Length: 177
Image 1 (cartoon, one colour):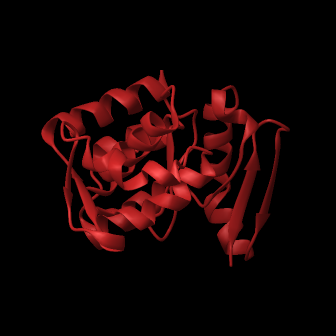
Image 2: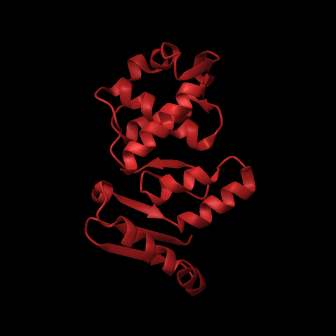
């Protein structure tokens, strides 16, 4: 599999793949590094594969990711991989695990523009060390301002309300400023 690894903190990167892949994405890599070398998320190592290309592919495939999302990719707040998985690159706003879980769900739901299955969010919460397993479902059941929760058991879903979409934009803007 062709991939590009960037570590902005150490100023290093590696590229694996065919010569064609490397030539095709080298310009994107240098542009990305130059634009983001001083960002707050520089302490994290992230894999990228020409972010602009992935958004174009996702737009063509799903029609769900619009041009406003590109701003947040370019600003270093999020990354979207070739399979549509959303990574949050910056510090998650919030003072408690519950708040951070809500904010992650708001951002990911906004980017994907689709209902999110609760169990699919757990790995993101774990990655950002904010999973509150004992209050996981209740956190979203009780938050009616930003989410509409449907279903029970392991397959419940959440969708954003209009105030939830506004909150997502607010959070993403905060992360790129």
